[in-house]
Image (cartoon, rainbow, N blue to C red; front, side, top):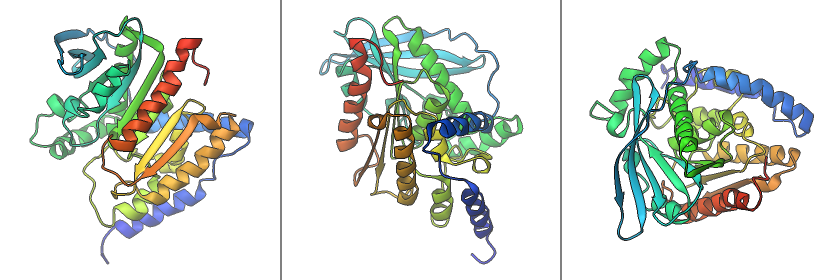
Length: 340
């Protein structure tokens, strides 16, 4: 440890974090701060295509599950000209009209679009149309034996081109929203994103960037970079190179990204029974965001939940996520979304 670079990195991270003032609770000052940070956040995510390539979606397969009445479609669409995304779409066979759309994002080293076997079916039974794509380097989009090797091959090349791993996945998620709103059976005014672990980090970065996302849920995904660097790198090694956004600590922290979602509905939940997202950082985020949502006059649009549970969207997480989506997406059926 004496010769390790860790202490130097921690000291520099602490220096940058201490320079960051808390988010203002006065609305005009808060809006100025968020507008300035929004540009920095976009820059830190790296280069994204200037022009969107046509989606050219193809539904390759459709099956109905006998035990639930839920339809699963296998869909392929373009994110970029040479980037295709395989995804699964779920909805109930008896659902009529335009449905609220949910982009569901997996955590790392998971089953790709086969993740969340119970949660995605339950969402479809509740009346949502759900899309679950493979992340870059996962599922069918992985060529190497594991995701870590895939990242170590791809991410350095992407960085040399001005791209970041979080930025590339965020762009894919923007295209997933494009696909949702292109469907005739989805209401473009009722779109949500829900993510677990690194998928939760993708979720709040997407919602911060794309205001078509009217509701966000990030589960077991929430801490500050300050806390991650202070506690995490000293005892465990993180295989997900998308966790850290280059240069972000020079301009703010993850709390500032969450604040870009306000006043749209945001639910964050953390598991005290794992050590991937330090509790200290989660609590700091909760305190500041409560002030942000009060400043916007929408305290009811922010909720946080701490539990001792599994690292998955199960139990209380599944219950609270579904209740949150029902509350904030389905009420628009009675006259339009009222939270923005």
